[in-house]
Length: 487
Image (cartoon, rainbow, N blue to C red; front, side):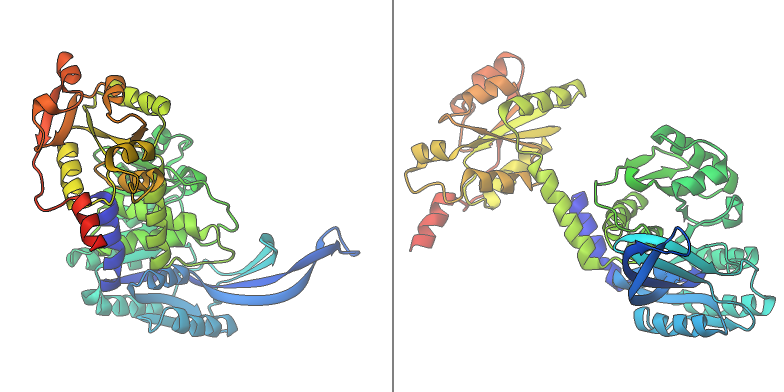
């Protein structure tokens, strides 16, 4: 199964999973308005309030993102016996559903973040919080609730905002209980001491957090890899996914090659909660059976979506699937090139030691016979170039009523196939001139040809290339299909 297809299966499979989310919950409040003047009392803008909104933040936002992805979610956190705590509990019930444990600790203030926003611009954030560790009795109740729901879960995520819920003993007990059941544990870390997360499966710091914890520069790919590997060696955690803002993210295993996923250029409205979306998506994907690199690819897409939203936003499975489709289409469009750029790309492939394959055709009304030929062709080379007859060429060969689909549509369909690496149009009746320019290592046609009748065979064989005749899938023909449609 190709990677995009596998990612689509993973997105669909998230709905059949369950994840435990534990950490520092908070109430995110937004006050929206417009600014038209500066205060006469001080050099500050006057916000004329037009609306308010509130939603779960911190670990609550991670849980809400899991729900948005269709994941069954157990949410465990601590709130205070105050108005913000009661409001947070109500919102959690609405956006997350029944929770594993939302424990009230008397005398403890619920973390509250107030954001004042004009248009898409934050003017001010005001926080009320405590970083004091939760009481022993609260920690015991929390751990008991966690261990009660773990049998039904397929992954655990720890969302640490350094507000006192994730004490060292709570972290250690949760990780030990999860590992005893073979569950992956994803940690969004805080602070300089990542060793407290020993036993976790993966850490997901942002670039700033990685720099602070490692004490190393983290500007380029190599520096990010070195800093991450230093922390992985010190903590015994096997892997790290580093979020790097507009630069994308890096998957760094303790052993093996890192993978750097570069970010897609997007208009950024608000980065609030983007890290929560990333850790939720990684956790959901791992629970659905993804590899860490696959999980990071999906998280990279998800993070790019939520920064285009205003406020503490969540990702939905439908949005993620749509973004994956868009990525595939964009990649497909980049495969259709004019002769000059196409030859430049083929030249780069050659310098990398790739074996170039070539096949050609009209590919009007793509059918299983076409797919079989293309897949066979791709199976015997490293990069497959498809020469596509232009509309004028097809009309000369097939008659005035052809093609059914114009060259733009035919090229787009071919480019969407994983087996095809490059599509190049040609105007002539045969691809001979294109074959001379491409100089493929392998020339592929169907077995209804002989080597002697394949256009370009002599040219390819003259410089040591060879001709491959692909097995035909019986019963498929564009002409026969059109004839049946006419009847």
